[in-house]
Length: 239
Image 1 (spheres, rainbow, N blue to C red):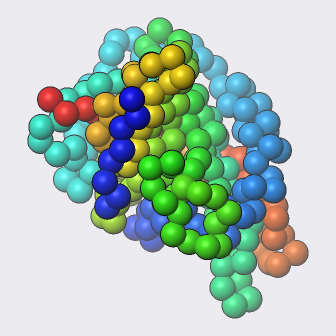
Image 2: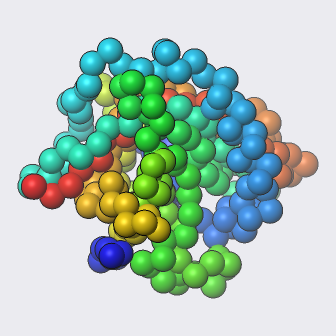
């Protein structure tokens, strides 16, 4: 059975917006995603998996209050991500350009180095697309698909649920996030490893920030950048 959920510093705000879908970026994504996926996978595989694995299961670290998981939820799953944050150079205003995130491409592993989920952007079938500029039926959301039973969860970053507080987030790392689940679907054989997810935290990040070069003028529009990153993702369910 499918489960539906109700729809409900500067770098962090921009990333927050991009994670929750930008029409121009998604139109560009449709043209370049096959290339992006292949390149991102190649970069991701270049990481050393033994370095990824933690010696012991980890608990969530202290976090800024604005990305704390609400009471009444408990840890469901922990995944250690290795992959890329993928950017494209786009016009960003009169006479200016900037790199914009169009998708992450990552694999999440458990403490034994076994892959447990993949992470990317995709349309959420439980939310109608309300923007006519986006050619898809569902809203584009951050997505995790279980590697064994193919159950899937979609989530969004709500306003204020992002932090680049230097007391927590490493210099040069993408922000820490709290994502709220907005849709979930069982796998084709009834797999439900992710269907009870309520919240996802992205913590312990390193890398992933858009480059400071390569997108400086309109002649650079369309240039791609695949930036390696790591993060820990903590999945929660209701108690």
